[in-house]
Length: 602
Image (cartoon, rainbow, N blue to C red):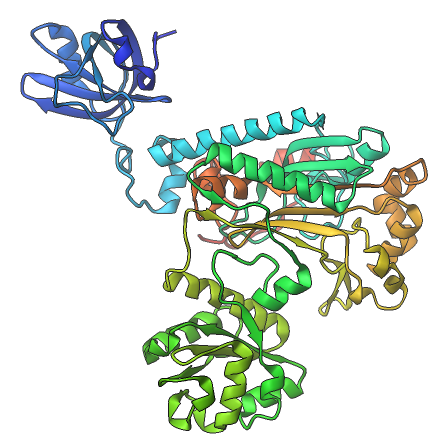
């Protein structure tokens, strides 16, 4: 080894030891005769002192060194002079007094600071990711991610799970997103698909008798990207035989509570995790992944405005839409500009507008007068109607009601976003809280208006609630599933379900999804056949580890916890991927590429 110790491990107990260190020049300070260098390696920093009176050659090397040079230093550990200790540094009690030094590699001036956590344009960070990863926060994020993976493996092994790898090259299948396809050279015109998840493989493993499987699996989905989504991602994949929903829900609660308490003890995690049905979550928050760190629950005002003179509300209800809102405590203090800004905000999420109604004055809502109602549409509402709205929303004097009228899905999407924005603006969110919850019993199917057919809400292998199984023949949209998600702070961390394990039920699900039996056998014949050879009842879950790591370190974007992420157009600025392929390589794969006029920009 080129070093005897790591920079960050030296302490006062090492006083007097001769050590050899190697690392990067983090900071260099020239104090006249003395040169001080903070030397950095994976473990941390240590101050090295170069004194020309004691080691002229080493001092000359230090004098020529610059930021991010790679150096090797030999010297003696000594306690810092009294009053010069650095309490913010783990090695702050000591310094290394250099006797020898060597430049192992010089460095160009980095395109952005490593020593300071300054904001840097994202494309530049990704272009020079090897520089970005040297910064303290990013380096710490990667270390935390490694610790997370170790905790998971220790946890699963202690519970007798077997880690099994599943294929990365498989058959294309409809699982909710577009597949990444890989052409076969040996079988012209045929394609593999990279796995969106190991779903089918892990169910086959249950039929094979392994009973307790897990894998930290790489998965791929060709879909639009955002802060919590990447084209390639990592999930903790789990499947268990002879299991019920409660077993998996409790397993995930034990794993996540223990993980956060161990790896991030400064964060506040409350147990037991609350549990909401899908229907309750949508009714109270407008989303199946609500941020539960603050209140601001939604309310449904449809009945209260059904006969309103305000035509926007009335006509929306007549067309089958809904009117929903959120009551903002003390929101009557909002200015016109603030409500206008919020109107523009909800329009980003599909809402046509936002109607505000403030209840001013003193006393109870029962004593409300027309003058106390401040709203752009106040003239369309009587005092009694305004009181009814306030009563439904739980509003009091000084509060403001913000309302959206549209079809239910649009209203929920806009109000969910508005609720989160209000939570931020009103200072209701505690960044040190991780509020976990389980959301259960999602709908089994949802209707796709564009293609006029049913889609699976989770995936085609999810079992219905036993009491809803009869609805598959008469009203599939009313059936709920044996499903469960784990959410935290407005993010879906993952989820799973009890699976279908009988061929007849699986074929019925495929039929509802519009697959004829010939197509079902072509795509899923291996599973249908396996179910006839003693498939046990089984269930599982898949947890997003990129999102989990982001919550552990407090990052708002999962790219902050991925070593080499892609941009919003799924590109890698460092390597240039995706790139063009030579004609010779395409010929070997029997592929021709149509001319592309232009490439998307970031």
